[in-house]
Image (cartoon, rainbow, N blue to C red; front, side):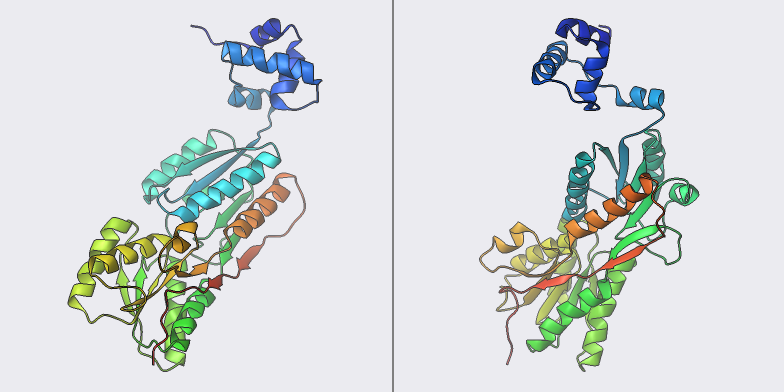
Length: 334
């Protein structure tokens, strides 16, 4: 069957092609009756707007590209959801691609994304190194790097969290409660945000005269991470407290402690990272470091949109504070 055209929709609705275009794009207001007729005709004919074709004709795009490392981490999906809402309010569509934690896949997905001729890109790189394609586009295409900004002085606008302070915050809470035997469930310690969180914990321990934290790298898959941490707990003296560096490693820690029959906080205290409903929907609600996800998305979108609109703004490296949500998963010792 041939593809339904906008002319056929216009004929079915008994209106002009221009009216159909105005209704479907929202470019100009029309009466409620006309809008109903057009929408009903489009639905009956199963008509879909060909956004790529309309963009090629007009030379303008209403598409924002978003790159994330994976869809397994709730942080990334929450970030995307917020960006979609913000973009929709300005009549922009969002095309999301995942690198699947692989730089080669990341490069291929970005090439495909560029085929949409996006007006701008918000990217969380898969590694500390920004993709080569984005580096080539600096100065030509509005780009925001978020979260995993592995190096300074890259020439990109960025939004990050003060991860060192976040690590210090978690450690200080534990130390104030008498914990001096602290372990860290890390995802990939080489990632700059994780490295800085670990450094924050270690610096607080050193400053307070506590032993250096033990670091267990559990990766980015919570089931595999639970296996690694469970094995470590079997062969090492149990710490009194555990700090998980991401929400994925928090899940891994919960699974491993459950397998070992270690109750929270009686046997081991636990501080998670990020803060989602499931962290409070437990018998023992988790104390957690909360990243300001909505503000991260808001600042990234706001700066990107200003550049898309052609505003004369300087390069900005935005650093936001995290906060500690204190609940019941940390016991007071002594």
